[in-house]
Figure 1 (cartoon, rainbow, N blue to C red):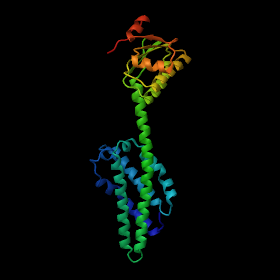
Figure 2 (cartoon, rainbow, N blue to C red):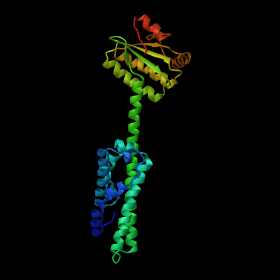
Figure 3 (tube, rainbow, N blue to C red):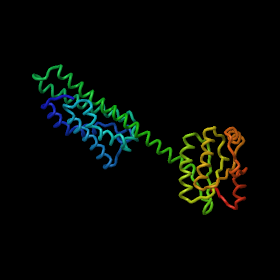
Figure 4 (cartoon, rainbow, N blue to C red):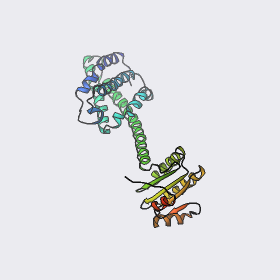
Length: 282
């Protein structure tokens, strides 16, 4: 940014009231963190804003890279904050620009007080420095917030996928994996990783995979299904498949899948009766 001791002292002093000024004019209908009514959540939001001002004032005399270093921890904390992740993105960016405006107005106020010593060129340079620094912080926030949102989405998807395909115990050592709906490559990968883990944790020796709820699968997913069967075999789990549709059967044949060591049944109840097991759907 820029070096001017008098201006820095002026802004540090004025920054003490910036948070309350900012919060009093905040659009609390914009949702997310800005619509919080719990005192603890409001205090946290205000503290984040106050921390920003302290860091912003400390950025005087620093170049762009140093500014990012100063703000990195703050940006990471706010960008990964669950409340900010649940806030409309445009609302967060708008508040950055409102804070930027606070500083531009303060610099204008300082220039008026120091009219005889502050030139127009100096004022323009200060304003540009504030804009450049704010933009750098915003870009870093956007980058970190996007990464955090992606991690959050992936975690949610994995949880949904895991919940949609649990291994259900049928007996002490037998389990059922009912697959329902469309299975894309991503879902197949996550589900089958979880299946291996669940079978190991539950000491399952025989797993029934019910495909009757799967309308169709592509060659990649079919390949992963049979890779799963191979993986289960390695950890000592015998596999039985029920409910293979004609379309899935054709895909398996095209892949050259050998059903010689796999028990195949037309329907799930047929497989369970054969092994004297029961599965009751609620």
